[in-house]
Every structure is written in C-alpha cells, then in structure tokens.
Length: 75
Image 1 (spheres, rainbow, N blue to C red):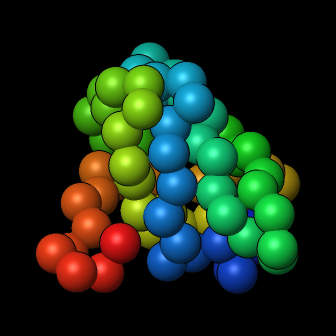
Image 2 (cartoon, rainbow, N blue to C red; image 1 turned 180 degrees about the horizontal axis):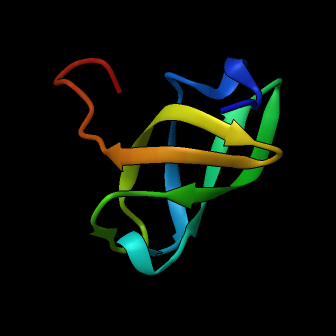
C-alpha cells in the first residue's frame, strides 16, 4: 500500500461513519499545521464523531483507522 506515511500514527475524528467492509467513511486529521480529510477504512463499522487512530496509509487520500481513546492526561 502506498500513501502518505506522515499521517500514520496520527489521531482524528470521523466526519462520516465508516461501514466496515461495506465502504469507507471520512476522517479529519490534524497534520501539516492544519486539518485534512481522508477516506477512512475500518474492519468494523465505526460511528460518526468517534476518535480514531490512523494505522496505515492506503494510497492517495485513503487510510485505515481503528477506534482510539486518549490516555488520561495526554489530551
């Protein structure tokens, strides 16, 4: 998989829910001094507004995500 490796490991918020195998959602990620929107793929559906962690870059503007909870005292 190709893509932007600088987005991997960043957190974001889903602005459109993911649908698991049925299709992607969209995630807003803080990166490069601003925010950018990526297509967000996940193994299981993830609801709108969920915080997620980017675990892989798929290619042009597409990433794999998993649900994420900030550790206490880090947010």
